[in-house]
Length: 235
Image 1: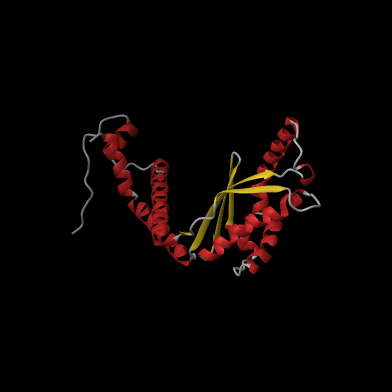
Image 2 (image 1 turned 90 degrees about the horizontal axis):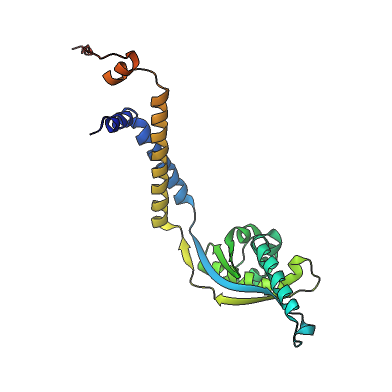
C-alpha cells in the first residue's frame, strides 16, 4: 500500500466522528423533513403556441414577408411564455376555471404547480397538484386560458390571437415523492455530507501543526528518527 494512501486513511480514521456524525445528522434531518412533505401528482402536456392570423385576413394569401413576421412574433411570444405561465396574473385567471371544473386551487398553488419549458417551438407544460384530478384540471385550465386570453397578456385589448396545438394531450398523473424518491434523496444528501466531512477532515489536518508520526517528525527536523519512546501505559 503506498505511503500516501496510508496517510489518507490515517487522517480519515483520526477524524472518524466527523465522517460518521455529519452524514447521519444530515440523513436524519432530511428524512424527518421528507416525511412531512406531502405527495404531489404531476401531469404533462406538450403543445405548439403560435400567433394566430387576424380573422379579417384569414382567407387572404399573405406575402412571404408577412408570414415571416408572424413567425418572428411567435418566437417572442414563446420567449415570454415561461414568465407568463408562472405569473400571478395568469394564476388569477385559472382560479375560476378550476372552480368551474370542481378542482379549486389557490393562486400560490397554481404558480408553484405550473412548470413550463420551451424547446425550439414546442412548449412542455408540467402541472403539479395535491391530487391527480386537480393536476389534470390545472394543465387543462392553463391551455384553455392561453386559448381564451391569447395576446391580451401582451397588452392587446381583444382576447384571442394565439393558436395552441396539442402535440401530446395531458397524460396520466405521476406521483412525485413517495418512499422510493425520499430514500434516494436522503442517500444523495448523505453522500454529499460525507464528501463535505472528508474535506473538513483534510482541512483540519492541514491546519494542525502537531506531530503524530515519525515521518512527520523526520520531515520537520530534517533528520532520521532513531528511537521512539513509547507512551507510558498506567496499570
